[in-house]
Length: 142
Image (cartoon, rainbow, N blue to C red; front, side, top):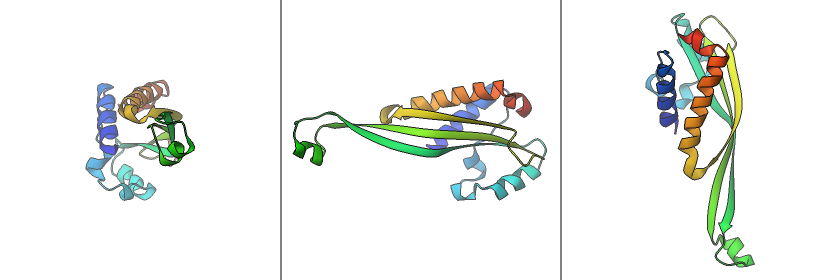
């Protein structure tokens, strides 16, 4: 999911004229993504920036939409088909060289059916780019 999300975000940023690379190409291990690493990275050049996006909470809800039998045992044994929905709170922030705090940030809630997570990720990226344009973040990155 990380690779898919970052690749698509990079493409969207490049369409806006921003030179971008996915973090996994620089920092392949998630454990290496921390404040100290970002600070060292940003100190390397005034042209560098980090767009940090994360899910701060994710809830998974399952509902039984098509029960085979209407009985207590069917409920207990998981009869029927289960629909899975993910509800996530996403936060993103833009960090640039020379600034301690984020120069731009955004928070949104997303809801996605399990089968449509990629579609929701695409919509999130489109909306994030729009928010970055409105907030001046895209212009700052060019």
